[in-house]
Image (cartoon, rainbow, N blue to C red; front, side, top):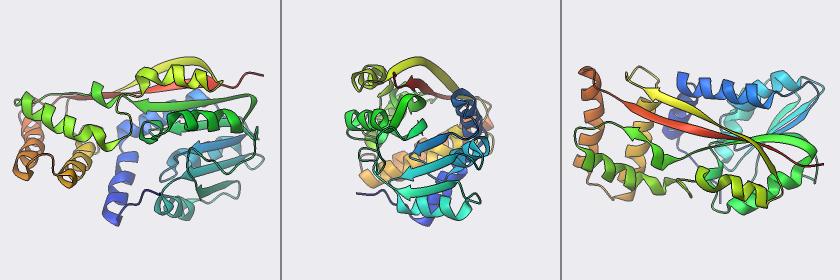
Length: 259
């Protein structure tokens, strides 16, 4: 089944992707995969298409860049933004990709793997569609490694615990190396991209993630609405007093398919 968003949720997601923290992380990903002119690249979980669009600049008209996403709405939004003939988007499941074996030079997937229920099938598909000698980058967050200041730590723990099931595996990076290797991929490097917000400036990740947490947890009805709102309000209050602190990070697994 596809993942769908209403317009408000889609706009919030795009705003997060355009925030300075995620832009910096996206630039780090682009530098690490170092796409060359003429290469064929697949972006699994392409969302609003900002990463695929930047990769298309590197691949050029002699290359081909394809973005796939399980949400048709995200595919439509990304397609409307695309201005390049060699860049396309389509709806697809990360565990059953509609491509032939050995057909991509590069595979990239950011903030997707932890949301895939069958990570073994995901890793197997990455191995299948990569050319021998091909390379890629899988980026994932350990959501249980978030460091977030609160004067009410029990409430903070309660909210983050209630948010944890929003993805299939909230601590995937801890086991991802072994699972990628089991699929036949080499893990050549693992790096960590930190996001630290000591000030809650406009567009920072520590600010932008709050509405997503509120929306998910309130929908699950696992934390009373007034308590959840008090949790959100506290973050703004701490910032006014100069006491805000939020930190998370993304693990980038640089991979390759042996010859």
